[in-house]
Length: 114
Image 1 (cartoon, helix red, strand yellow):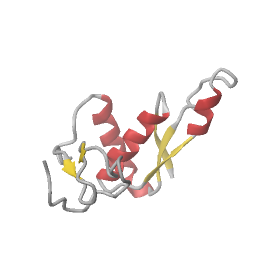
Image 2 (cartoon, one colour):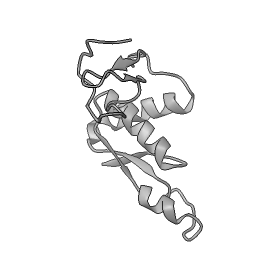
Image 3 (spheres, one colour):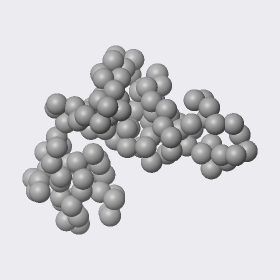
């Protein structure tokens, strides 16, 4: 397991985790609980919310995706279309893997792309 990204806030950490998971890279966010005690603990790279890749074999690919995110470029093989939740019909932005309205996970091959 290796840290690949330190975020400025938990939302950004979860966004990057979602980008990685959208490319098949298992990742988790750590340190987001410390965000609520800002001002009581010093803000350092160790206390910021961070994204960790679980498989060492995927670290290089994850770093490439993080670099693309930081340079505001979309990776070439990232699906760039929105999708529609098959359960509730909500239109979802492409970077999300779960419907924010009902919690349904994005299907592997969404039938109702928008």
